[in-house]
Length: 536
Image 1 (cartoon, rainbow, N blue to C red):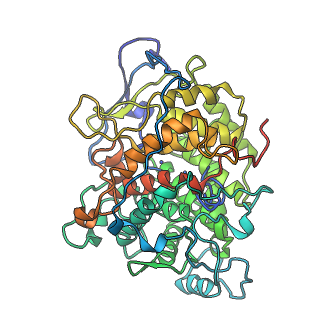
Image 2 (image 1 turned 180 degrees about the vertical axis):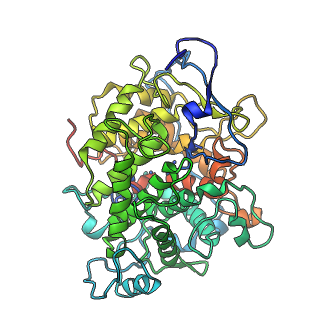
């Protein structure tokens, strides 16, 4: 990129770089593809993925990048006093009684043979959904992963047990978030970025996002349910709402809005964020259930991602536009990885191109990862979020992409990236200040990257030095900022106006991506410390 060697800020036309970070500002049984079954990739969407609608409420005229400068001080984490375990105190009256055990829910038997005619391959009728649902009885609960605890498409057992160190304190936080999402689902099965508050009881919830992002936030909300182990076969009811029906209606909405090319939602504006997140949700739902109703939709969604990729490189906002960006690439890689774990067809060339892009935009001195090129520095939308602090969110995305595409623990960029993340821990602070610190997208990807790199293992329940620093800070930042019963209809959600990218997807995005981050313990097996595989 030109002028990146200069020390002053450089302005670029929106047409030249067409910015967006929707989800920047984001299992054995889920998100990876069921990230509960394997690893969403091993997480959210997130919309903070920098998902910026082409025609936002305010047209973005320019994007400003500042040259990347190395941190003034890289703290030696070995010498820092590690945080003590932080427990999120949830008042007894706000703890879900249903979650006394994380595997208490009833689900359909996904191994039972289907003897119904599911109709035309390109259509999914309500009758077909209902017949498949009724033909199933009992299955795994949250965190169980999938049939027999295996990740479809792989030989290894990807189940990450939910233990005291792996998410015990997160269950009430996640369940309250899922209840909020369930209460605010639209009758058509979608989650409405700017109209979700039509479903409110009492004073309406604040935090509207851009309507162009409805497909993406719907995918993100579905991933939150899948990430906790629920599927469209689940028969549990919470507060009188069936989570299984919530998921079925959401999946049907996505299927009904998939075009003949396999793209979810309209192919307009910066639609690849929407599509990748929706494709990720569909792939994970298939991976968790092997449901015949959604296999073709899941495969078609992944095929479209591969077709949209620039030759020998990565992704941007549209189909093969010639330029690339790391944020869209992160969502694309997660969807493809989830599909591969689910046993769907994924071309290796897509993963190779993604790895080549991450290599190209990684600074080899400090291992910071750029957005549309090496050294692009802080990325923000003019007049929207320039007052928020810049974080190493794209470095976290780069780490995740490296782990999913190349799987090499000795890669120096992983250790280098972990050091940068370790020097910028999550902090929830809404006090007036020069630069606001809250960035849900960064917290999501940072949590995924560090959990994968040196998270809990059979030998060390607390994980490595970077994870032990990050984890309690993340728990405190997210768990401590969730809305309580005193907040009325907002109970279980998170504010979006305090977040760097919350203006994109609103309260639905904020709630879904934070739930996904809190589910990391039982959504993804960690690649390098869990002992499931052998590194290169």
